[in-house]
Image (cartoon, rainbow, N blue to C red; front, side, top):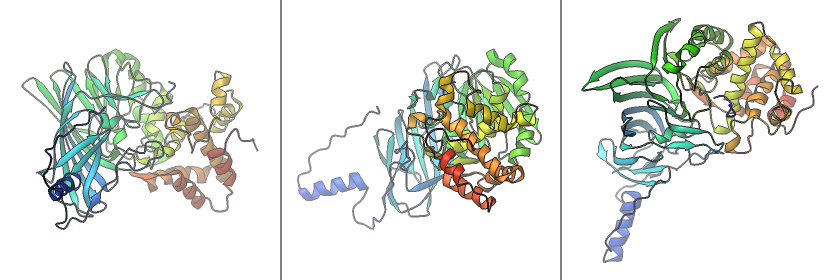
Amino acid sequence: MVSRDRRITSVARSVRLVPTLRAASMFACALVLGACGGGVHGTPGGSGVRDPYFPKAGNDGYDVTHYGLRLAYDPGAEHLTGTATLTARAEKDLSAFNLDLVGMEVEQVTVGGEIARWNRAGQELTVRPRGDIDRDETFRVSVRYSGTPETVTDPDGSREGWLRTTDGVLALGEPTGSMAWFPGNHHPSDKAAYDIAVTVPKGLRAVSNGELRGERTARGRTTFVWHSGQPMASYLATLAIGRFDISRSRAGELPLYTAVDPAEAAASRPVLARIPEVLRWSERRFGPYPFSATGAIVDSAALVGYALETQTRPVFPGAPDLPLLVHEFAHQWYGDSVTPESWRDMWLNEGFATYAEWLWDEDHGGDSAQETFDAVYSGAHFDTEEAAKEIWEFPPADPPSAGQLSDPPVYWRGAMVLQKVRQVVGDDRFFAILRGWAAGHRHGNADTADFTAYVEQQAPGKDLEAVWDEWLYGEGKPERP
């Protein structure tokens, strides 16, 4: 992502009074736990994974390995119908488990093909299968749902979720918007493969992540089938529905698919033509591209004021410039393939992508990364004194609140941390660290402690304590050595 400056209705059930205490007790037990006695040994999975900024995001007790989404959208009625089938592995014995879903009407839930009980409370969809799910058991849960998906307003005031465009919609998910259009385990720590089939009126296109595996038209409607085989955090899933100019080509061995709003086509074409060049440069700096497809989406969405690193196919709310293209493609390594363990670790996404812009300039006749660092430190890089001061408001590894996850310190000070590491360890070791970090956590998750430990392991004998204490975790503006 680029910096952001750029009701549920609870269903009340009425029950007939049970004439005996024993019967009432049995009824309550069945309603809450799904069974009493009879060999029940599981416990409910937790609602939320206690993320420091979004404690209800994600769910405890299982790990999703695959999402199968079958969606149909009617833009005129603004109505979405969907079936989400999740394949997951239980991490403990489960009597119930939760999914995250905002809005929408749930019509049916099945587990293992059998009808399951469920209830709603806020973003939590609690599912109670007929029998316990054993630890390490692989199970499938399907949710049939429909309605008008919501636009979600973040703590920082920006918007995501289901965003209307002039001819369709754009679905964006960072940090919590993905739960507006499909149920799931919506936290970056749980990544999965995806197959997304979307049916729309003929003449519109539905563009998502990964590889286009199918496109068929019947009875005035077209279905597009998208496949993402490498693990993806749900906030990186996207869906753009509308009229697009489509370009199919290749970047080396990779299929390259771009979808551009016709109104943005002329302005976008020169920059998007450089995607293969940006990928070649990125591979030299960061290692092999981590996915099986690439491309971009350029759409005109009045509610969106930011670009987003949606996996394999970044989204731009208008024609991008070259630094923005470099930034969002660097995220394919740092943020998409190596995904933060929690939202506190956002600087591992944004600091790395910002530093990639500095490296691009350095490698293409512009300022060196050190010169950019110096200009940022002195404030000369910024247009206003206020902007120059903002980057020192908090340490990049510890944003004070959810509303500040995309604030300047996460980007600029995050990049400065990397330049300080480079100063300490030297160029050869530093660039080996960049590549090794991406390779060692490829398609996985990592947090700040993992990164600092990795750097120290790769640079024995180098004193990095001041870098961590003053630049990564320190309050205020550090003294220059």
